[in-house]
Length: 150
Image 1 (cartoon, rainbow, N blue to C red):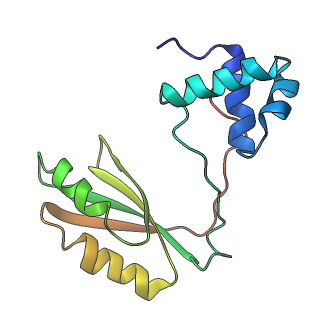
Image 2: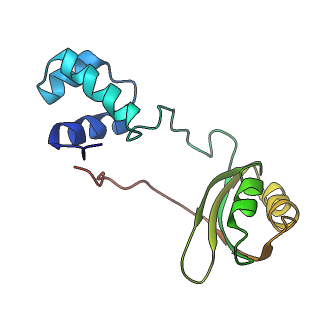
C-alpha cells in the first residue's frame, strides 16, 4: 500500500471537510479527471485510509449536553476485555489505550449529569479489570483548523 501522495492528501482534506462532496466536484477542485478521482477514492477506501463517511453531529443540539473525559486505570493485560465492554457502554463516544498516568482515556457525551454519573459509577466502574476512574468535565470545546495531512 503506497503512502498517500499530494493529490490524495488534497482529496482527504476536501472529504474531511465535506464527506458529501461529489466525485465531479472533487475532480474539479483537485484538477484531475473524474475517473482518476473515482479511482483514487476507491483505492483510499480499499486501503483503509478512508474508513467511512458519516455526519458530524453537534452534541448539545442533539441532546447530549454533558461531556466528560474519563481516565481509567486498568489491570495489566486486560485491555482487550475492557475495550470490548467499553464498546457496549451507551454514551461512550471514543476510547483510547494510553501510555502515562492513566491506561485508557474515554470521551463520554450524556444528556445530563445523572446519566454521566450512571455511566461512570455503574457502567464503567463495573467492568471487570477497571481499577479506578478519574473524570474531567468539558466546559467548552472546538475542532482544530488544520488537518495533519495537508
